[in-house]
Every structure is written in structure tokens, then in C-alpha cells.
Amino acid sequence: MLTTEQKKSYQQNGYLVLEECFSAEQMGVLKNSANNIVAEFDPNSTRTVFSTEDQTKTRDDYFLSSGDKVRCFFEEDAFDDKGQLKQDKSLSINKIGHALHQLVPEFKGFSHNDKIRDIALDLGLAKPQIHQSMYIFKQPKIGGVIRWHQDASYFLTTPISVVTFWLAVEDATLENGCLQVGKGCAEMPLKEQFKRFEDDTTELTQLHDFPWPDDDTALPLEVKAGTLVVFNGLLPHFSAPNVSDKSRHAFTLHITCGNTLYAQENWLQAPPSKL
Ligand code: FE2
Image (cartoon, rainbow, N blue to C red; front, top):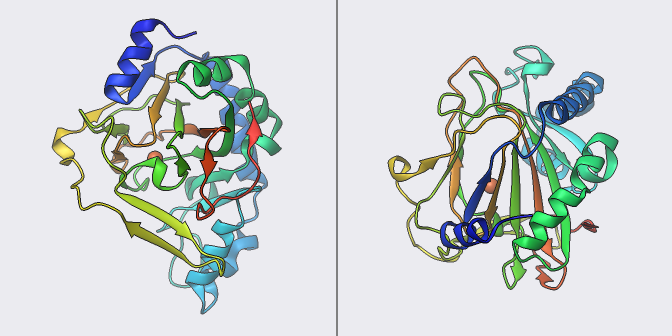
């Protein structure tokens, strides 16, 4: 249950940091589950993604059809020219997505609980529904940059409703590429829309030429494991590369309100789960 001050802070800043929201034990359960998925994953099953002539299309298909599946995605630099992993599989995965909350018991249980639901309701999502879940590894040394973006570009509803639940499974610091948010940007106009067309081509459409905040004006959210950060779909955010020798695991949920209209152009069209 959020306090009046917390709700006010979320409205003013576009985000809210909830420290010690979940226990170390709960983080351990999620981390083990994610590591097990990677351990069971056969990298050869997606080797074609990186060895066929039509690389881009095959890679896009692997992504675009993952909305109701549990799939591992490699870091961009994971493979060499011959399609061989440069380093151990466990250090090559960028993320797992996008239906952990529906298909993997540990993540399903974690996502569909009263705590998440109550926070969603308190933030104004009258009918909260989960569209997507991701487990992000941000690997030591190779975890790449995530450029400035707004999550409503990918989960557009009318009116805009998406709230991102970003859970630190491990400590997040400036060194290992913590989340960074724009200051005073709670209601920045939506700058881009990621569209998926009927033929499964995609496009990032520019809606405004409003500039992204400067990196050095961003507010780094250095948080301990178990902290939940929630932020609205218009809040610009990014994360720098992980230059440390520590991973920075995080689990994210994208939750919209069922009373809004979900855009037909959104890439993910799998049915959401009610909270
Ligand atoms: Fe994001």
C-alpha cells in the first residue's frame, strides 16, 4: 500500500523507488530460476539466427514471435564471424523474454501477487494487466547500453497507461549500468512509436523532435537488490554499459490498464494476464 506522499511523488517525478520491497530470498528464487532457463537453453537452437544469409529477418522473427514464449536473447557481440559463441553461454545472454510471468512458475507466482497488484492499483491502473516480462542480465563487461527511450513507445494505449515495474534482483550501481531517469520529465511528450505492421515489418516512427535529456543530467537510480522501481510510460530512461565485473540482474513487468485501448500496432499482441 503506497502512502499519499509516495503517490504524490510518483505523479510529480514520473517514478518511485520502493526500497526493501522484496526479500533477498525472493531475489534468490528468481535468479535461480533464470539461471536454470539459461542452463537448459541450447544455443544451437537459435544458431540459424546468426548464420543464415537473411540474418535480420530471422532474428526479427525470433523476437516478434516471442510475446507468448520464454526465449533467450544473446548480447549483440556474443558470436564471432563463424557463428560460434565467444564466451560461455551463461555470460552471453542479454535477456529472457517475454512471457515468464505466464509460463515459469517462479516468475508467475512473483508477478501475480497482491503486492504488485496493490501498487498497480495505487498508481491508477484500475484494471491492471501484465503484457510482458523480461529477465535482464546486464552481463559484466559486455552488458551493452540501452539508449534513451520511453516505454509507452512499445506499449501504447489510449490514453497512455503503461507502468514499468523494474525490480533490482542484484544491486544496481553506476558502475554496473543502473537505470537512469530524466529529471523533470514526468510528462514529456511521446517521442517515438515502435510499430509492427501486418507483414511483420517494423518501424520506429518519430512523433516529436523533442530532444532526449543529456546523459549528464540524468538521475542514476543506484539501488539495492529487492528494490522495486516503478515508472510511467512517458518517463525517458536509459542505462549505460556495464563496465564492472559484476552482473546487474533485473526483472521487469510492463503493466497497462484494461480500461484503455491497446494499440494494434504494438509489437506484442499476445493476450495479457489480469492481475
Ligand atoms: Fe524501458
